[in-house]
Amino acid sequence: MKRWLPIFLSTLLLAASTSVRAETDAEVGARKDALDVAGAFSNDGFKIRDGHWCGVVKPHDHAVVAVNLYAGNQYWFSAAAAEPGKIAVSVYDESGKQVTTESYNNGEKAAAGFSPADSGQYFVSVDLVEGDGGSFCLVYSYK
Amino acid sequence: MIRFAKLGVVVLGAVVFAATGATDTGRLPVDQLEKAARSDSISIPTPGELFAALGKSEKTNWSGQYRGPMPVTYRNRAQIALNLGGLIADGFIAIEAKDSQQVKNIGSDIIKLAKALGVSEHLLARGKSINEFAENNEWDTLEEELEATQNEVKSSMQSHADQDLVILVTLGGWIRGTQVVTAAIMQKYDERSAKVLRQPALVRFMQLKMNEISPELRQEPLVKNVSEQLNGIEKLVSFPAGKTPTVDEVRKVNEAVGKLMTEIESKELPK
Image (cartoon, rainbow over all chains, first blue to last red):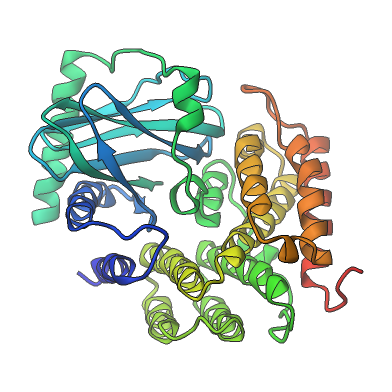
């Protein structure tokens, strides 16, 4: 329980603090759900990054974020959508080629697990598989 | 119990997925890669992530990477921000070393430097949490708390119209983290560890962020110096994919970031 306190406090503080773009209630809710998914991996020793990325996902479109990963680490990218539907998370290398990941899909929640052989830049894509689109949030964890 | 249930769901999902085959292979077009979102909070890894990758292959002597007490009386705000980032990286080192007293000392110095920037109002509670987690040897939680502290400092900087300093905190942390990692790899070279040094896009991204800061701050001698030297460092960490840096290449990166770190720590600012 104690372990969740800093994450919970960070969520509240970040949601309350002034930032470049204020988060919507839907994004805050999606972030909480994404943290729920990521929390499951904590049992396996994964540490959850405090940072997050929220946005809007539309039908037939990719929402893509660049990340920089280290060879030797294992990563899980966990996302949740605010609206009912089905999302998927995919990872691409620096040339844009999709890499093989472990995947978890459960409606508006999804995650992709990946262990890079090379350090460097990768791209994480959140895709809408079913539904009309809306806000989503992505967090990641590593060990 | 709930966490176990959640894990069960995840594992089940993964197993179901594995049964149906691996992810379809595809490709993202170049324009989508260029348009990809990039942000300080998710595109830039923490020093803790870098240290975690290093710790996989060889037992690292983390306490051997400590540096002496640093001044917390700098007057130049850019220099304070750069050193604050470096100090946060030191906190991650102390966590890797599982050294609760060192974590507490660094936590206290972080608060002092943050106060000098006027962004400490929420941080006293963080300082208490860091002490408590350190006393209870809750290392994973401490790592998350330290990152949360860093993000709170940055968030506070943004709300105080000090957003230009945010990238300097990040950069200070990356420079110190890279200095420590290269030193550790040189002490006990192995190819797997050396692979963590390939980060050209990360350095390029930090350079772009540096170019976005105000012209006045960019003209400050220390900031200008750091920015110029980043160009050379980007070349040093631009290894082709699949290539492992040699000991000599690791040494070159270590010398470059070490030189920068000396300038950042120095009470004598460059002219």
